[in-house]
Amino acid sequence: MNILKESAQTMIKNILAENMPETSVINALQEHDFGLKKVYLVAIGKAAWTMAKAASEYLGEKIEKGVVITKYEHSMGDLPRLEIFEAGHPTPDENTVIATQKALALISQLDEDDEVLFLVSGGGSALFEAPQEGVTLEELAGLNNDLLASGADIVEMNMIRKRLSKVKAGRFAQLCKPASVFAVVLSDVLGDRLDTIASGPAAPDTSTIEDALAVVAKYNLELTATQKTYLTQETPKKLDNVKTTITGSVRSLCEAAAKTATELGFKPYVLTTTLNCEAAEAGRFLASIAVDTTKGVNCFQRPCAIIAGGETVVNLKGTGKGGRNQELALSAATGISGLADTLIFSLGSDGTDGPTEAAGGIVDGETVAQLKKTNHDIDKLLANNDSYHGLQAIDGLIITGPTGTNVNDVSIILMM
Picture 1: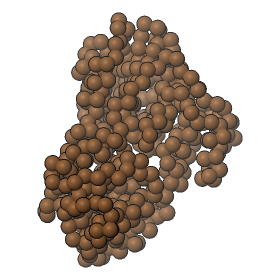
Picture 2: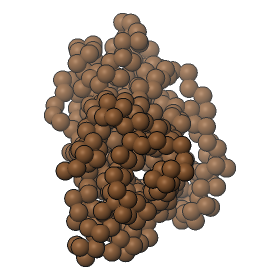
Picture 3: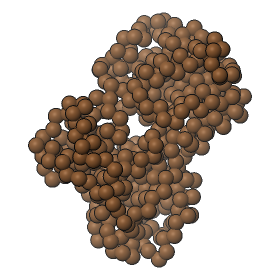
Picture 4: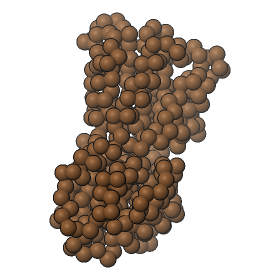
């Protein structure tokens, strides 16, 4: 393994290590006074188990009981006084509904002397769901898949999903009344919009009926008559029983990347923390920056680490396997083909990029030539959205396993 790949692996390890939610959760709890209230815990999202574990260890028996809902294979064992559920992501399934009903039963009998500790992380939209009357789980799953395939971003997706749900868009917090809610949020949304993270179960909704209908028109979504009715009903705009703190976001990913880059001898440049476009476009853009840096026509001085945080999208046109980070990396490979001492990697902080076990992908100046040797055509791979198999063939997948956190993605150009 060459020095660039070794450096990339070190950066990946350190970026994830510095963005585990345990410390952030404990810091949030230290700053909150529960007083004499009884505490009931509800945790949702890909990082739900990790966040719940930290809260359980810190608060101990002060937690009466609770419900934890996370993605399949993201639970790491039992936790005292807490029921652990695993469910479908990115598409909700029957276990999603069962687990959500358990959470709703938990908070249904609370009074003003109780407080709900609500731990929220990315993925909560799919993992925490109780469909509105007359809306089936199958309909929600189909609509979710349509939105994913269309290339809609997370804000647009959640505008639709929250209106078809009994728990999204602040409705969960309303159901907790008269109990108070303390929400600790791990952000996977650019700009940290509370009404978008996990579709905002405990946040007032800032989107309007007109906004939601515009998304339907933009992506030509097919809705049932019942779904259309719910889309024309306004969501809660005020909540008086919620206090919220955000514990982590994509900025912390970029800060950790810059710190490790410096330690490894690379000059860090944070290009953006709001990368939001087609994954393939982002890959080509980063490759063009690497080319210009090689030519010395921009401001980046080698050795350098050029860092871009955010979350791209993929508009599915093929039938292959992959995720946005893998597609971004593979799309960058052509642009940097033949460049010496240049590497680009893209990493999903949760450890699962799209419907794969990979966290992302890593490419360098030799990637295109290596693909040709394995009889893979890079253009065909990208046209079929099959970045996974291309990267797999050249040992270009980043495999971390579920990480226990979820704060967007980071893409990095490393140049010696």
